[in-house]
Length: 203
Image (cartoon, rainbow, N blue to C red; front, side, top):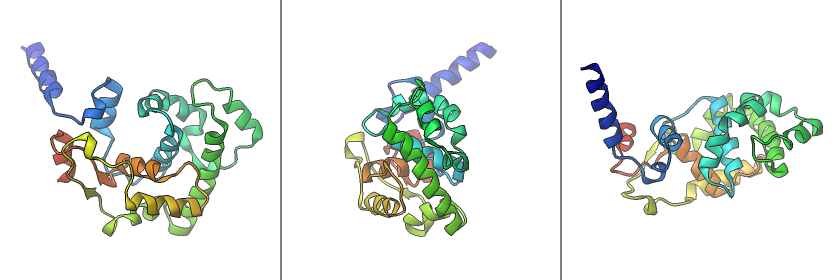
C-alpha cells in the first residue's frame, strides 16, 4: 500500500505541466522546480547567479548546471570577499581546473565583478537592495507568456540594468545576460502560463 501511494505521488509529479525548456533532463527539471523564477534576496546567492549567468555566455545553461558544484568548489563558494583578492597565481590555477569553463576573460570577470559587488554592498547596504531597485516597488513582475517562443531575450529593463552595471565595472553583463539573471532570481516570472510554477509564483 505504501509503495502504491508513493508511486501515485511520483506519477502526479511527473504529470505536472512545466516550461518546455526544462524537459530535457532531470537536473534542469530540478532547477526549474526549486529555483528558477523564485524571488531571491540573499546577497551571496545573488552573486553566485550573477557569476554563473556570465559564465554561460555562448554556452547552454545545462552546461553550467552540470559544472555548478565544481564552480562552487573552485571559487570559494562564491565568497565575493575572497574572489575580489584573487591574484594571477590563482587565475593560473583556475585555468587548469577542468571542472569549470577555462576561459580567462570569464575568470577575470568573476574577480572584477566581486570587487564591483562589494562596492555596491558598501554603498547600498546590500546588493539585493540595489538590484531589486530596478523593478517597480522592488517587487517581482509577472509576465503572461503562453509559450517559450514568446519570451524575449532582453527587455528595456535588462538593457538599463546592463548599462548601470557596466558603469560600475561589472563584466559579462550584457542585456541578454541581465535578463536571464532577472528570470533566474525571480525578478520577473517568466514561467509560461501553463506551467504549474507560474501560478505558484504569481500568488
